[in-house]
Image (cartoon, rainbow, N blue to C red):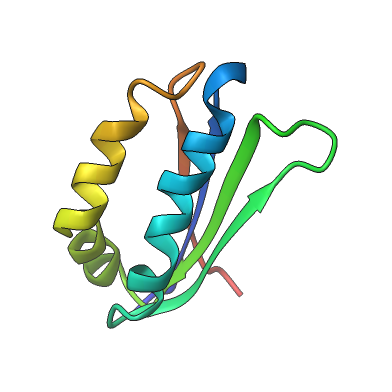
Length: 97
């Protein structure tokens, strides 16, 4: 089993940043309760309130894939389409050491 780290960066439009914060915040509690979730944290850039980043750690690729199929996540992600300034950048990393 190999741990997975996800860095998901999103940029809200200036007029939607608080709505985006509400949507993203709604992911935190249910995700942290999912099997395989080690860490799931939402960050907002202190000098740029349009800039949001999730740092996630998962026990396995399988746990992450199950997370991505959760209905609350799918509906929330579709709501983001109208809130983001640019497409999200989502990077996956495998634990090496």
